[in-house]
Length: 76
Image 1 (cartoon, rainbow, N blue to C red):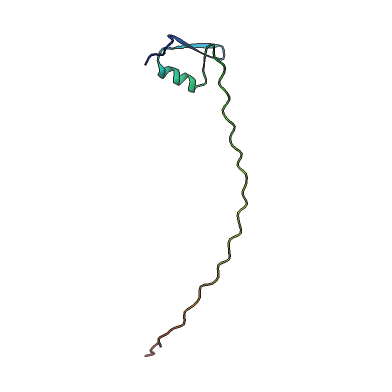
Image 2 (image 1 turned 135 degrees about the vertical axis):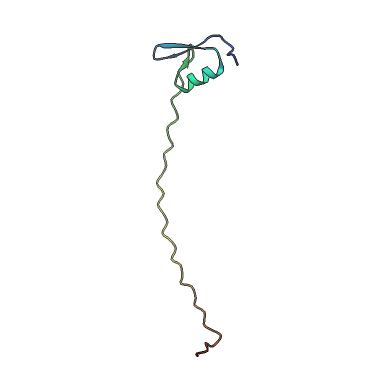
């Protein structure tokens, strides 16, 4: 699709590039280019700080109950 304003000029570091299609504009914006006459894009949001979570001590498990034999073992 064509951009509504032809050509749309993008600026980065004093260099200018013209874009005629939305695909070109998206690629330039992704590479850090800014449309001429607009404000610079806000810097990327800082990464959230992850708080260190202390691991809980494992719960001590009770030993399993042993069952008594209800039948007699036949010795041969």
